[in-house]
Length: 423
Figure 1 (cartoon, rainbow, N blue to C red):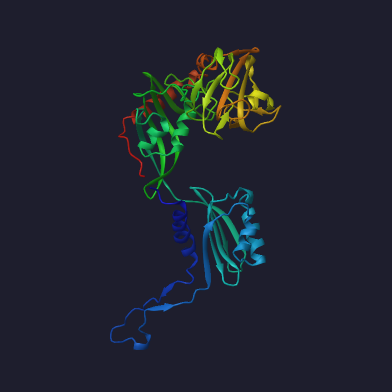
Figure 2: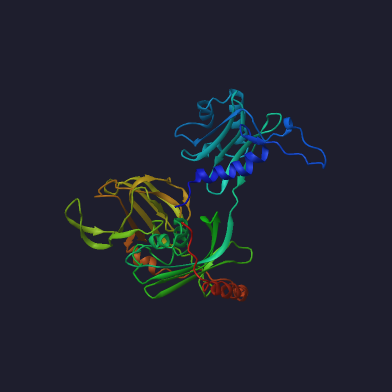
């Protein structure tokens, strides 16, 4: 089990920051002078430890819900002048509205209410540190927490014991972050709701970040291979000249498709498929089911399957909270039974943007997403339509030779022994 982030922050703050500017209220040791031959140090000078009275209070805690930074300082008896000055210093380098409840902090406060240091853990990689100088002027900065990065191989299988990508990677000691990255890379090629079967497998070459031997995150996936139902899909990270890094198959075609394979970010499960006639579970009569239903937990993010313009963001009776998006080539997608809507009518959105969250509004027996797709005004089967999307744009012919060299080098790294992440 990884140590709590609060414990990690204490180590980095106090070793790297607080001790670097002096220790207060601690045990100080007198440095012995060099001994001169023939001279004996007087007994009254032979001393070891001097106990200094504490002059400050170190307060450790987490940001409370519903409290501003200034109000939290008041709760801990920070002097009024320092309370305002520290907030101003923080605001100069960090948006104080982005302090999240539950995140750890350390406050070193003198007994008269003046602040010596304040440190807040932004995330696993960054600290916000405020320090008073000799003139008691506050200086704030965002600091990176040191970590080690290595390129490593990760191998895994889909089995009856680990039927999902998250379970498989968890069994390998990896974090959810890596599963989300993989799902993003293969979002146009694999529908994790229906296409994973026991016997499938994957290999990755990834930059893994560790701290004290524990995984704290990942950099880029450099290469990936997913074998699903006997079909091997490979992805290579490559930046074309003047372009941003993207993922391409082994023939140099982009893995980005016009449609995502699924509107749910990760591993939904189809519970009701597109059908011309289906008995409605609530109305109890037969009618067309113009889409597919995905089982998903309440609040799961719902993504736009393609770029487009929002044409509806509101209530539609049986569909509850609903979003519709108009795309190119005569397509329109719709997302029903949402618990919350995150877009507005007329808004231009990109592929993968969150349009809402899974819910059970309208005529629904439980939390799920109903996803529908229309082409030229007529409902079509989304699963079949997504499957028939053409491959992405290829790498320019002039760069294929360079791409081939990068591909060969990264494919060789697939053979690296798989390393298990520390728990």
